[in-house]
Image (cartoon, rainbow, N blue to C red; front, side, top):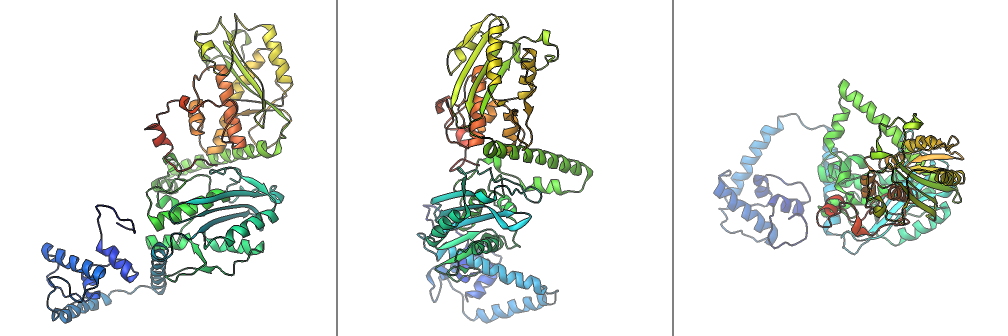
Length: 569
């Protein structure tokens, strides 16, 4: 038992009781007895120590003049002399440095701060956790605001991520990652700074405490945009203020008796899953989670990400080693990270810089057994067994969807029945009419998308369809006609390697069924695209949840989605 919750059966540590009574770290049994003026003798005897521990418990809980089975008070003088003698020997050892002593005093203050928040601030008080991101080349240019309002019991009444409209052209990426478009806990908003200031000022007025990681920077930014913080007092010890400012770095120092560390290291140490740091909205939620983990000692914090996002401290240490092998690994990780950053910027470009009236085509082309060893340069040897495509806009409007099966080369006789979004057309083999229809549709669109789009482009060329004007887009550069791979979008979204279409759908919480059917795969690729680009809760033609591939409500979902709210980002 480490908090005020009363279980039916519990385990209580008298060291915790001592810490709570004297606002300090737990100490040895002997020091407890001395401090509480309880006579003792013959410690380190199992029977004696159980009685003395019971006496410590009774003294702290009931504060009686005399505890049960108390020894003669004459022993107290002897106890003090013996203990002092032991201390004299210790005093001959080198003393702590001034800095160590100051840190020790500070840690004690932070322990008291944790105790104060836990037990002396009412559960009905509101907290606002804040994170403000600025342009790395000029800290006076504010780019993002993230905040959430919550209570100690984990109830969240508001969470918000907003991008500053007038500063959208300023991108980080050299010193800190640019994850402004990767908010994991809802949909980002774009507002002018004056409107953000107005809304944030109103929310700050409604709460009792402001929480943040390295909160002084955020307070400085608030003052810069003329948000009055005069009534809020910085809290760094046991004193309770009606309106306070709490730094989670201080809580971390008090909790672990060490110097403060970064948000990422705090999350690692506390075993809180995380991703896409340096996004104002994400960081505000993760900072709230650190606060609640330390104050309430929760097994699972609100809005916790799935366990797959949990990172191991030993992995971080391994990468830091200076061996040549790990140096290679570090370079590889860095290269991959840079690629993922480019893909993340590509997502941002599509999201913000490609106009809504542009047309997209999702396409899937299958060959017999979908043989990836097919020589794509040998047009004569390529046989098409299935074609699927759909035309849509960024807002999710679908203007055409089509699935055609070519029986001569199809190896799956059940394909027509497997198409979930309409009626499959069947032909003996691909005809000029089909090629002309597809060619006409392609000429009318701006962007081709697909899962493994390069292969599709080669196959289109084998069908004498000219797609040379479509540039494969792997960077933020905008092209009038482009080819976009949903594999790259997935990597940019989650900063990880792509696995499979099925895994992508599962990760994005999109129901799917009857994969490896060109018609279905076309729709699913479109849904992945729209989910990532628009961050929308529901995508066009979305299947009902019971058809989620490999979904097991009792086991699989519990394992994969062990969280209070998903996302992100």
